[in-house]
Image 1 (tube, rainbow, N blue to C red):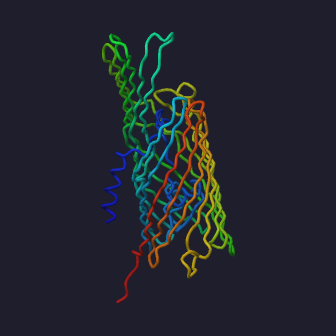
Image 2 (tube, helix red, strand yellow):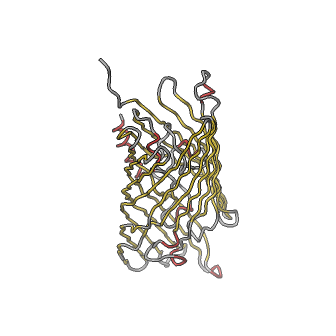
Length: 401
């Protein structure tokens, strides 16, 4: 069953996770790669340690799993978006498998491992605009279309160095194709159209390091976490096909880099019932090469993300089902990494975790509302519903005869 789900997950790389015109530029919409439970908490993750969720955003967290338990997490989403500008408004719907992850102990409570398939970025849009040249001499139609994903498989190890500190690392293999097309077609006969196709194919191995410091006394538990990724070259092939009166096909290799990334987080838990968490993440996009350029010339800028989340359950061992349900709430603010967009992205989220009676399984649901842009340019409202199933099974024990 698990192998079949992993193979099914491999098909996620061929599906679009977005229909946003904002994904038209650079690598498209970036994904945070936190589990469904933490999406409902605004996307926190750097300081989250739990034996109920696999947290690939923080590789140091894997040793929080039970020493006898194998965990498996699968999630899918459906979204509805409305885009509005001066020309009117459009509605779009999407649905896709989000991620597949697994986690298991290697040696007692000291070493644990996680593997899985995750999305890195997504491109998906289809725009048609009508206009006229200066002086209203000619009328034309502009069309823009894009699709594709960058996906990644990862393997991560986590080590408990002491009873209060854990470190870990994820190694990712990334691959994917981003396709974009532009067309300018005149309504008048005798004027040649201008067509342009752009294909970016990438692959690379990158590494994320993580550390967590944690302490529990009485009913109180605190965790501080950090993550770090070094700037790395992205192996790439870039093909640009321009057609007007003749075709030209320049092919470039190289000139793309993944940015330096670092993040900090803190969480506090009271009586295993109430958790409050905060994350800050910084991606140094402006100093990474894109199409052989960096800084203002690349069109990229540094990106910051702030996330705040809350989780509550009335009684973890209560007899009433409602006492054991997880109630989650969160919000985040992040900069767009594209200079041409400039607007911030605001997200509010809520979610519920439903424990399955008699099983180590949790069904997590999340609803996220996102707003970015303005009516003077392009305003986007979107709702995304995510359903995740986290299965925990006791595998690693010796049966007594």
